[in-house]
Length: 359
Image (cartoon, rainbow, N blue to C red; front, side, top):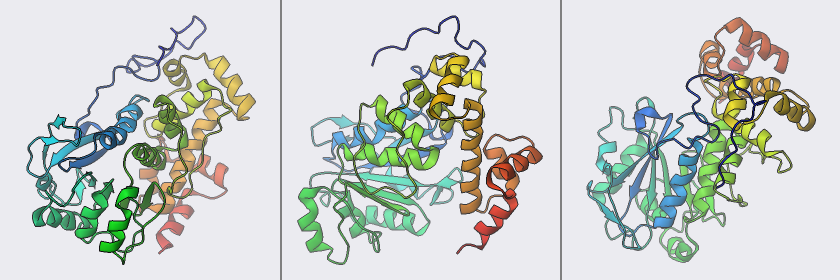
């Protein structure tokens, strides 16, 4: 990828000391520790797993971390905590054993957050997966963990009994055998299926789409589309969670970059000059482009993104209004309530009450 040009003299020069490099951050570490990131993905590697699937699973998360702050970390696990050999013969060291997830203070949570486990396998997934590993999966499922499986890994999840009631996507070569073994489960033709706390997919490059969908569900389409561009990846037509939109390809790159940085920083508020510094664009030029293409200033769009995110949280969780306000960068509750009412025509407390009343 070509280097971004140096900031010109008319570029924004006001920036906080923490913004040490223009967008995207080239100095981000390749691997964050779980405690240093907002979300952690545990990846269980089954012997003879697909290396391509592993790369496509992790690279979108690595790239997303370059857009302003540490969003994702991952831990590689094996059945016994020892290194695992992939189907291409490459030996991969891991961070621990699968059973370590059961030893968490709350087996469905890590540091107060939901445990997420993705199983990556390929040839002969049943050979090295025994009753103990299936017991771990059942234990995690019983404690509300988020479970996924790629390539042939849906066999492992199905044998553990955690896919009942969910559509299942897996590698096309394995579909006939899966249908024969699990006639009660519905097999999907999509590259991946994301239903509630279960994710299954065909593996390979489709894993990029799955992770972009996850990024989008957490931080919005602009960040997901920017990550896809960095990976030179055109998102496919897959079964993704509802309420997802695709960013307009006609937008200038600087606008797309700015939107991505905004969505990656909904809780840790940046100033518009900060954003200009990160993307290497003058504030005057960025404002002109936003007004031409989006009919609002960068400040107005950023505020709208934060309020839209707040509304989703209020409607879908039991968080208090003050917690949600702080979560989208408002330090004064009165300011948040006033801006919220102006945008949505009701106070945030009313949205919260509707959310609590929903089944």
